Length: 300
Image (cartoon, rainbow, N blue to C red; front, side, top):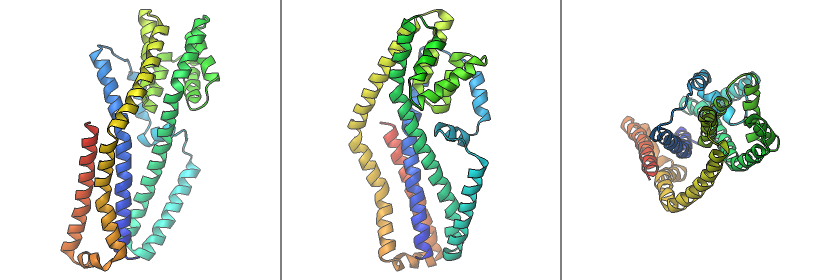
């Protein structure tokens, strides 16, 4: 394979993976904005100073590992770095410096996409488990248990990942941290707005003495209604999202087909300085177009 083909294929793959990452992150970003708007319009204030300070101490990469349920070790980091270096050297020897430069970028993006996919699956599992978990908490509260005892009982009967979250919450709570504050920290780490609301319900109950059972019941109902609305919205916007994917991928697929079938067709441009500028401009414009499509989908 020519250097041009390697360069194009790696660049196209990077753009495709970036598109996937952007599209998958849009839903969580919209949900976070909606929750913040709800808190602001309701005149509520969440005292999250301590949790935000703690979260700032954790790098975004480490937060992603935590959300994925992994704890990076030095041994794993050395192995990944060594394999990446070897691949970079091999590709550089066979295909030149430009192709070798793409290898660490591709490895980093693939690793990020794998972690993001794993973290996203865990968040989906948390949202699926949360209504049943809250039902168990409500039943335990109905027998006269305290909130901490009810959470402990429900966590013991809940599988991971939600079990892992509340075991950490209860462990920190036993060390003296506020219960609602601990839940809020986990909500910020995993970016699950429903956990924010659980934290808010406990905080309101302990501050103003309202019925926590009524608040939790409303949260369970809201989760079910929100999931139904999400499925309906996904169905209604399915055609639009497919159109965006087709428009975003079609130029890359056509260009890739041309490069594989007749690489000499583009080598003329690659050998000329003006042609290289045009090819680079085409990739940049493709990325801008993909970003524009994402913004259009996000605004629906």
